[in-house]
Length: 175
Length: 165
Image (cartoon, rainbow over all chains, first blue to last red; front, side, top):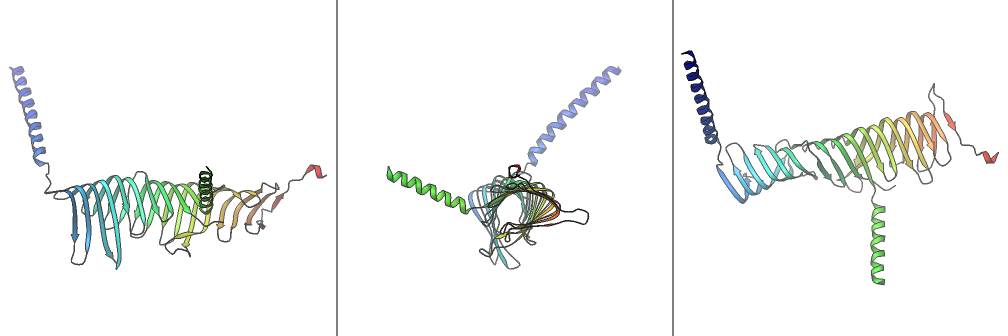
């Protein structure tokens, strides 16, 4: 009699876990977000009453509630902080944007108004603070100076840069 | 055929001139930091600085920069301060110098080097060796000034030619 009870208990338990897992999968699929807007081969402008603040060109843009996904895209950001006009250009194959935070992946190119040009395969950049950082190999060129290394940290607002495993090449006067 | 040789000659001469005009300083380091506001560059950890055949090795290198007179958008090195196991090889017009010290300062405009602390300088051409607390080298004039410390007198060693005896 006890064995029967035990078998029923096992059956009931396994049925419960089977349906619970299936239901979770259904819930996951339901909860998968769909983009609110999709753009293909588009150019978008973010315009204020004073100027064009951003120009976003992409092969494909998916706009979700809290983020934007851009593919093969270039973002041009114009600002006028402290009456200083600046234009920063960001491009990459994959761009994920959460507010001011941008995560760039594959063929990343960042051109800052202070003439800093950075090429890498992965980069995080904040539009507001102008801080760029990564953990991978990068190449930064400013005027005739070339810096390569890893673990880049660049504060574009104060032009402070740190990096690891660096090779720096600077043009100097002839002796 | 003569035209072809002329073209080759022009290309070779142009390449030689452009190479002669370009002069680059290469610096390898584990850590790098630069701050445009303070106009300073810091290199730390296994620092190797090379320019043509000149080489300097140290643990820490600080380069102060100034705005270039020729191009105000550019910053150029004003002075260099190398510290920690500093050693260098310097190719002057007529000589090769090997040096060591605790700290080495270099002023590119004046082409002056100062070795401070446990200074050692070897002149490869004449075989002269100097051990002193402070050694000043003027690359332009070829003048070398040596200072000893309180408990560390200057040591000077000359290579003597046996055949002259």
